[in-house]
Length: 609
Ligand code: G6P
Image (cartoon, rainbow, N blue to C red):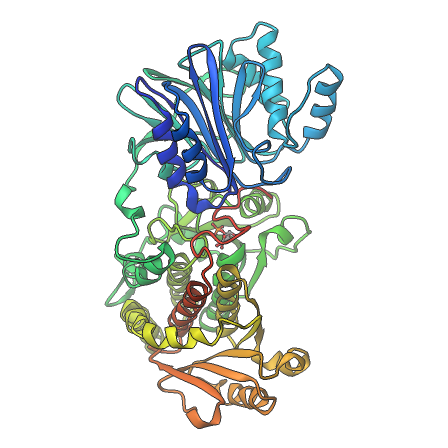
C-alpha cells in the first residue's frame, strides 16, 4: 500500500527519502516518486515500477535540496504510470497522499469549472489543486492545508511542500497513519516508523485529524480547528537490523524461520508452570473478560484465518460461542450482538482500513468492549481498543504473512486458555493444553527441519495451474491459509475445502493434473479424513499429505507423498502444520521465479477500503 516519507533538513534529502522509500517497499506498490524544493523550484522525479527505477532516474539527473517529499503508490484511482505517480504538482505546491478521497469527483468538477487543468486521473491531484487555490487567496501553507482537509471526505495522510515556503513541510492525517520523526536539526514525516528508523528513533504518532508543520528546527502539531496540540514522543524499539534479510534469500524465508523465536516471545511472561499468568491483557483486561458470554472476531486475510482457528479452540475448550467474519462484510451489515459479546479485532499491522472501520462501527453495536490482537503497538487498532494482547512477531516485511499468523495463533491460544480456565475447564485438561502451548516454539523448530523434503515436493508444482487443500476441524482454516500462501506468491490457483465437502463439488476437479494437499493431524477426525483421501486417490489425484507422526496413515495407500511431522499435540497442531504449508508455498514460488516478497497486485498493509 502507499507509503510516505518527507524531510526538512540542512543536508540534501533526496538520498534519505530514497532510503526511506526502500524501507517501505515491503508494503507493496507499483510506482514511486519524490520532489525536492531548491532555489524556489520544485524538482521532481517519478517512475512506474520499483524504487530503484526511480532512483536510477534521479542518479542520472540528481538535484540538491533540504526539503522534500516522497511516495510509493499502490494504484487506486488510475493505472500505475508516471503521470499518476506522486508527488502531484499544482501551481506552487507538490503533494503526496495515502488513502482515498471519496468526494474527489465533485471537488474535481468544481476545480475544472474554475479553469484548473488536471494532468492525472488521481484523487490526489485534487488535494494539491485545492491547497494551491487557498495559497493563491493569500493563505500560508499551513492554513491552506487546514482549509483543504476540512473539505475532504474519506481517508488521507498527506505531506505537502510549497515553492513559496522553502524549508517547510506540512502533513495531515485522517483514517491513514502519519507520524513525525524527530531528528537533531532535522525533522521527518512518514507513514510508518520503518521509513524513519534509519534517521531517527524518536517518533510522534499523530492523532486523527491532526495537521503538522515541520521545518528542520521546529515542529508544531495542530488540531483540525487550527489550535496547537501536544502529542507524546516515543522512542521506537524498531531497529534497522530487524529489517535486514541476513543469510536468507527472501524476507519470507527469514520470517518463516523466525517463528520459533517469535512464538516464544509471544508466550514470554504470559504462561508459567501453573498456567496462564495474571494481567496478560493489561489494565482492565481480566475484568472485561470475566463478563464475556460470547465473542465476535473480525479480521481480514491471514488474520481472518487465525480467527477461524480460534473459533474451534474457544468453543471446544471454553464452551463460549464465537463467530468470525471478514471485516469488509461485517462493517456493512447489521450483525446481531447478543448480550455479553466481546468484539475482537485481529490485525498484524493494526492499520487495515476495513478492520479499523469495523472496530469503530462496533462501538455503536452494544458490545461489552473491544480486544485487539495486533503486532504493532502504536497502531490505530491498538490505540482504539479497550484491551490488547500484542503478538511479538517483530516487523514482518514479506507481503505474505507467516510469523504474524503463528504468533496470532499463539495469542489466541493464550486467550482460549484464559477463558477455558475462567469457564471451568477441568484442571487436568487445562494443564495438558498449557504444556502443549509451551512446547510450541520447539514443535515449530522441528517442523522447519523438513525444508529439504518440502523443496522436493515443491518441484511437483512448477507446471501446475491449480491445487486443492483439504483439512478438517481447526485444520480447515490451516488449509485455507496454506492455499492463500500458494496463490499469493506462486500465482497458482489454489482453493481449500473442509475435507468433508470434497464430494459436494470439488471432487469433480480432481484428476491427475490436480495436486491435493491434505493436513492430517491425529485425532477423532483422522479416519474420516482418510476416507476423503481415498476419494481423491480413486480419481487419480496426486496426494501430498502432511500427517502427524502419531496418525496411522498407510504411506502406500496414498498415490503421492506423505510427510510425517510431530504436531506436539492436538491443541497446537494447527500452528505446527501451518509451517510446512508456508514452506511449500515459498519453495514453489522460488522455483517459479516470482517476486516472493512483493507479489504482484498485493500490498502488505491495506489502508484503503
Ligand atoms: C493484506 C496482507 C495480508 C494480511 C491482510 C490483513 O491483504 O497482504 O497478508 O493478512 O492484509 O492485514 P492485517 O495487517 O490486518 O493483519
